[in-house]
Image (cartoon, rainbow, N blue to C red; front, side, top):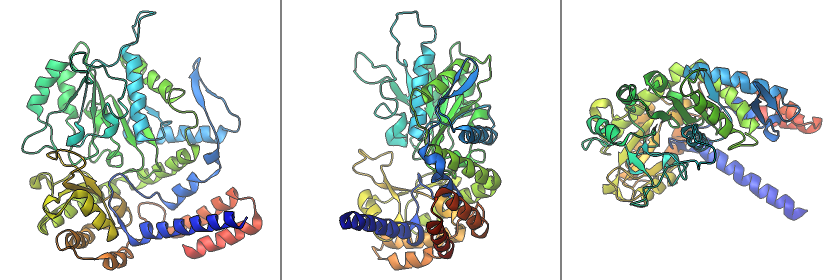
Length: 478
């Protein structure tokens, strides 16, 4: 018994230490992460987190296969309405539990869709040709054959390679597409699916350009936009559905305010040529990819969508202002910043720096971590391998939510430059500076949120004496 208790104590202590380090002493600049608000976290641990609510459309009705699911059914429907309003679309699929799963659901559905007229008894074919962003030029792993695209695209019998081509990029700026060459490639290869979106993401994708080129084709490609990194910037950064994209996917926890989940959205009205694709997407979401679709985080995403709807414009504006200010400050302090200076280096939350002359990317990222500045080493477009990265990738979204403004990122850039250029230890300065940014913004204030969080906690745990003590400590510490 003592061994069990000691293990519990040891783990809880390590949890506490990690929480304090990440939430109170460090600057979190990893562009694919964010901290949910207190109330989103309360939703995540609420009763639905241990439940099931499998459902599918059968004979025109949505059939649920578990009892006790009325509440989460209503939550899911309300969330669908909230996100449809956010994206300006009529269809939202919420059951993928990650952005990568959302992409794979679409790829599975595409294979069914292109085989919709297949004669009975004939084998199903894979996608004939897919166009995506090159992994070495910032493309996301999930849209590569080694990722979620695996086994859904045809193989070239002559080369043995997957029939995937990459968007061409400008020689002078490999973060932007070469539109002239792109037009030529489209006419030559006629892809069935085009996957926009990146993980190294500082500029808009050429959705309108492509949509205009292919709109009169007899059989045009399906245009998909993986917005995982920029979902929370939807609207101010880019409106892909209005620009001609057919379907968007994304993660809900990078620039969006939610817990870790995935989402698929688009416009597929009845009678649309792609209506069958949407029905296939729903079928591949369940039962094709999920059983339990993690109802605690589903509930948390609804709370997050309230926050995003309320604070969207203010947050998005500050994120982009902070990113541009951060990029310029780093560049001014002698750290080369990727992208075009005339564009402010970036149009998203991301800032990319080139640090090869100061050391190996992995080494620099570790050195920053040792100084409580958490970043992401990154292979840049001219690097030969991901094992020899010459870049660091950063995002301002999380620290923006903790109240940082342009002048604060200027100060942080000085600390980063001291670590990278001067090899100076700034850990204590970083810890002290972080104390100015402990209260989360763009959500209910702590004063307003604590009573609500306390009531949720009391409803979760059915032990009166424990609840009183827990709530007392909870409110005291906050």
